[in-house]
Image (cartoon, rainbow, N blue to C red; front, side):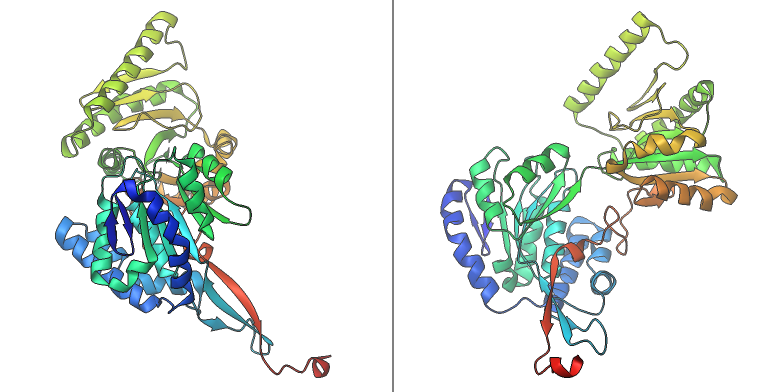
Amino acid sequence: MILANGKLYDSGRQGEVLACMEERINRTMEGKHLEADMVISALACLGQKLEQRYGYPQAAGMFSREAMEGRLMRELGNARPYGSVKPSPNSRISTRVMPLGTLLHIGAGNADFLPAYSVAEGLLTCNVNILKLPGADSGASLEMLRMLIDIQPELADYIYVFDTSSKDRDALMQLAGLADGIVVWGGDGAVTQVRSLAPPGIRLVEWGHKLGFAYISGYTDREAELAALAGHMMATKQLLCSSCQTVFIDTESYEEILEFGRGFLDYLERAADRFPGSNPIVAGAISLRRYNDELERIVYGEGTGGNRIFQGKGCSVTVCGDMELELSPMFGNCLIKRLPRNKAFGCLRRHKGHLQTAGLICVGECREELEMFLCSCGVSRITDAGSMSALFADGTHDGEYPLRRYVRFVDVEDPGTDLCNER
């Protein structure tokens, strides 16, 4: 389905809708400007409805007036979109904060409401927004944006949604040609594709796929911390960029991580009972991969430093011989690896473009030192192991403030400036 100007259209009418879009968008941008306060009020109402209708308490918090106003102040300072500030009191230049214009959001399918949330950020900065839905979209984002338009009909001119296939390059190029900026969520392949179709001069905002990991160097409360880590893995199914894929242990000993792996499987199984269920097709594919790994172990031998699989009910642990960060099989199938402190920096820096969240478990007196170490490696978030995927309304995204990427700054000379006297 297509959503344009508050109305739903069949996907077969994509060409017809695209033919009118440039004129419609230009008319919107030339006319009455969108007001951030109105957007904030609409989003706050949406957050309440999402909590009441779908039981998402985090939505109410993240879309609250306090959270939205806090983001504008934190990310843009004293200037709202269409506002004006002076760089210094005596400056003859005023700087106006303007929307970038039109944003094309290329959504990812690893979280139901993420594509719509990206549009909400574009609205908060008063942009026109075009959302290209991910192929595996559940329909949640379209429903959420329709709810938002029902709450505030004036937003209809600022929201377009297309279910265009990623293979329809001509349509994607048409959409990209309408945009002042392209916001792409997805893996390296998606980012590369968008770069290839973006016209010169278009601002690219890349929120590529990232990898999360846990780093364990001692414990403050071993039982509670490992239970929280296992719960996090099973609750998120390891599908999010912030989810833990690999558990690194600060040790040189392979026998030590073997022992850890055997014990951690118990924590995962208990967590699997609380968060059951995965797609049968996915489960079958993982089982085949596990079976292949086990055959290779039998044929070639385990050896010191080889991979060892511990299969549990609805989960598994693979103890690996290498020290590299990688994507796990997900769905409660985690990787355990050695990563002694004296080798960790080089190993993690090799993946600097894909680092995101580190769940840190350590003794209290070492935490500050390890936090600084992980920051230096390139991670953008450090949390307790159980809250790696928690949403923080006042946090950054991959180490950046998104709203700054969705505006532009225009310097305007104040009228009546006497340049001769200044000299």
